[in-house]
Amino acid sequence: MNKPMLILINLLLLAGIAACGEKSTVKMAEGPHENTLLHADIEHGNATDDAEEHYESSSAPDLANGRRQFSKCKVCHTVLKGGRHKVGPNLYGILGRPAASTAGFRYSSALKNAGIVWDEAKLDQWIRSPRNTVPGTSMSFIGIRDEKSRGDLLAYVLKESAAPD
Ligand code: HEC
View 1: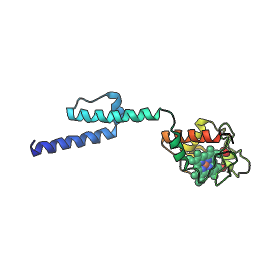
View 2: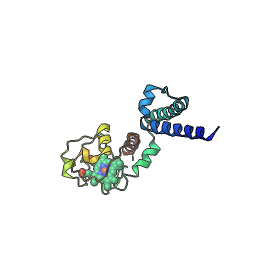
View 3: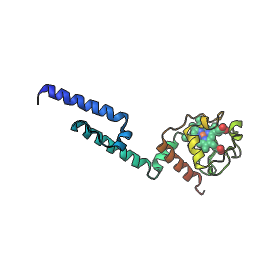
View 4: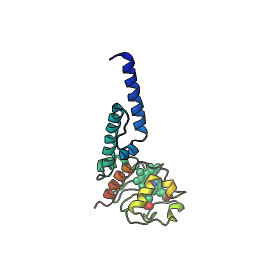
């Protein structure tokens, strides 16, 4: 193969990869494009990767990852029964409990007055952004944007916080 041809193929490859990165999810729905064969092959490869990711995010929670995610919380929280309060309250039995109701912890008035009962949806919202969920909360944690990570974390917290002694 001569040199100009090689350069051309390289350019095509680069263009293909750049285009795929931007909107691979949309392309998945559209199916492979009708561009050059080279381009279509690359898009196809990318769409497959994407499909695997989607499959993963709809599968059962990964408790090992949940435990790893909890390292972001455990500077401030214990979760098992009888665990001490740190900067944040012990989280034992959190599911179904009114917010700010654990004895012996000084909650912010914002959380005390929020009128929240912790169910899974509310906890998910809280972990995504405590500040947006309850403006004025004293939990200074930015939140976790990634849905899958939140799901794994929440599964871990709910399991541990409901564990018998
Ligand atoms: C920097 C310390 C800190 C970190 C990190 C932190 N929290 Fe908190 N958390 C707090 C404080 C302080 C409160 C009490 C908030 C208030 O009174 O407004 C709280 C409250 C909570 C509550 C409500 C408890 C109740 O009894 O109503 C939950 C649930 C919670 N945190 C979960 C988490 C999870 C899950 C993580 C990890 C993703 C986390 N927190 C990370 C400090 C922290």
